Image (cartoon, rainbow, N blue to C red; front, side, top):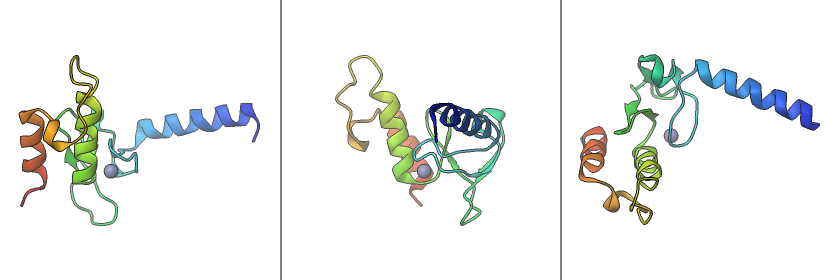
Length: 102
Ligand SMILES: [Zn+2]
């Protein structure tokens, strides 16, 4: 596709992502409205309620939950060495544990 078609395609994707819930970690589509719309989203395969990340946004798995928190905390001043769960803030760790440990 040419550059104009590509731009239209991207715009369409953006418009679509405004209407559907997506996982903040991997970007996959979920059943439901976007996080900011204040509704609940569900994992398509299992129909389970999508968990909410400590910093906001839906996540479809523990992996995506950790990834989302790492991606956010690494942007905080003095936190550029954060690589994984063990480097996250206590609050983010507790939130992830609450979401997935049971
Ligand atoms: Zn995900």
